[in-house]
Amino acid sequence: MNAAPTTHVPPSTTDRAPDAVMRAAEGRRGIPFVRLARVEARKQLDTRAGAWLLTVVVLVNAALITLMLTTAEPSALTWMNLTETASFGQMLLLPLIGIMAATSEWSQRTAVTTFVLEPRRGRVTLAKLVSALALGLCVMVATLAVAALLNVVGLVARDGDGSWALDVGFVAGMSLALVILVTQGVAFGLALLSTPGAIVAYLALPTAWTVLSALVEGLRGPSEWLDINMTLLPLMAGEMTGGDWSRLATSVALWVALPLAVGLWRTGLREVA
Image 1 (tube, helix red, strand yellow):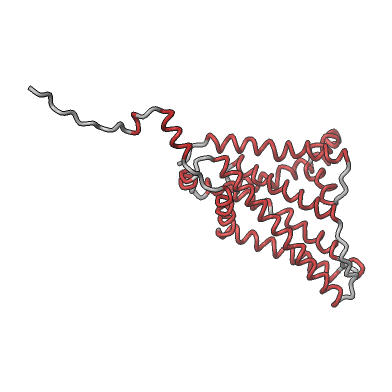
Image 2 (cartoon, helix red, strand yellow; image 1 turned 45 degrees about the vertical axis):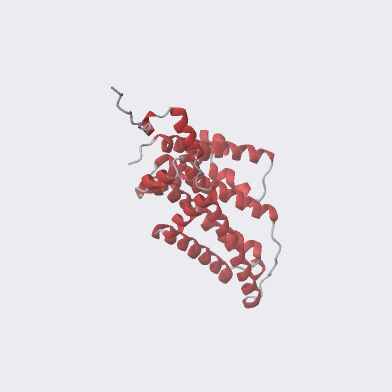
């Protein structure tokens, strides 16, 4: 009697060798990083919170420049002074964009969609950071342009100085300070994964340290190294020296690198629901 013919059944995915499955997964083409960063930037602009925050930044900058334009002495109306005046508002508010970028997946419950499309969480986090920094620097450029326009207004309407001299060290220092502060916002957002909590911590903790070090004499020495509000001042003024760089690096390690490391650890291990 002839044996019954056997039917070949292809092995299922679970029967394949693990290394073959891994090779197949690694061979898939990932989402281009530029597209990830563009999507993250769109998230920051499309939400009502992000749009309102940028609107507030623009209004604060406009109010500060208008106040200076109408009250300052004509000799003080220069491109440099107008830019410096407008920069204080964005230094305070733009880091909040970084916080909202870092917490958006967890506060809006979109983590499942995001991490299914791009499972490499570190890559998504880097895209959030790059998009937040790019948006902040764009606002910085826009501030320079608005200050230049109002410098002409001051020259015509109030017979201002109208000087176009711009200290390169000042612009570079303000730009680097903005990068540090936005990165700090992203770091606090990743560490706490809660938009309100991260905003409160970002605004309150460094300020509390500044106040405490001013009240307690024993903390005044360490605060020169650990108070980021103090170490950023020479940078934003464009007057950094050798010792200032080491103090800035120490405070950035405490207030930026440490929460960023905690945030990367938390987001890497947190279950997506």
